[in-house]
Length: 460
Image 1: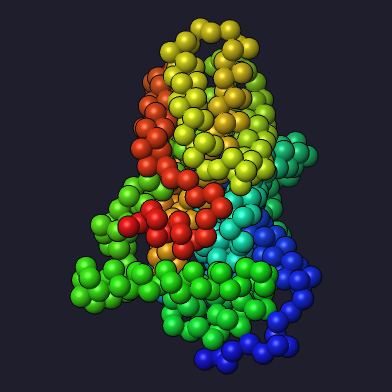
Image 2: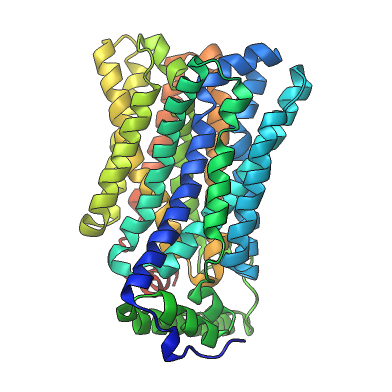
């Protein structure tokens, strides 16, 4: 165990600001990669389908592969990061992504064999991205001052949408230039290598160290990397929260058991788990399905090449939410916009012969407002779970959300072909209505509160 920090270890405000910029940058890079690997497939789906001679079922599986991977990787990495620490897992998950991304260049053959290779590779990329959710956001939340925590977490979310939009544009350009589809989808490798190198040397989370009883190490890191104005309050609150939770555990179970997945469904945390997982599931399922196959979804309505527009407006919704979240609060940006999006999808599904301009306006408005409240899907789990289950909680919520995203992405091509565009949109509206009702019931307000206050206030 390290000794307490000496005065020489208390660094300048400029050093601490540079550290925060670096931390935010590598987290933004990870989220950008997540959006990129999903968006890059859209422009080359046709090439993959024709060259490999596969049907829409395999196309859906390849598209949903990373989402299935996130379903496995998020809870697994969440458990590992709560057990072994944020720092080592932050490197391991990006190393896995580099290896899997590079493997896309070497997909061989055709037919089911080649499709299966591509599915497995992109599944492993999803496992790594799942680690980003379970490791990155808890790490950033534990280093962030409460007054700007929402903006910092939201900025990383905006990177996903920017990555998705950029991938759509870059993929279209590379595809039109005649580059092989393996090169197009494998282009994520270069950025992944840069992000991996940039993560070398990042410190462990003080909150995690305190939870493991390593207080001296936590104080040393906090004094070196966290702004001094926040140091005393942050460390004291985390210690107080730990004491409160230990006392509660003794009362309930006569002993303190290690955090596990079962903890998420205990009397203390079931509402947090239901809200964060359910809200995230209902928010992303319609968006992933519509955005991934945007051109195919919009074509029956006479709208062509609308995928970039949907991605751009979703990114704009995230950016505006990031600017407003620490001023207006979380709940007001979560509940009303969900009801609005549910109504818009229902109108699209029911009014099948509406003028093209109306349908286009509704689709683009849905993308904008959905992007806004999707920003909160990653912020709430980081704020509502205490430090010892923050990774597991974030990982579980992300995993549940990716069940919906994967099902939506996998099922939409079949639904459009067999049920029609109108019915498909009515189903999407139903999911959005469930999410709106859940948030109306359970979404809390956490603006300006410390992590100790948000976890204690909501969990007990």
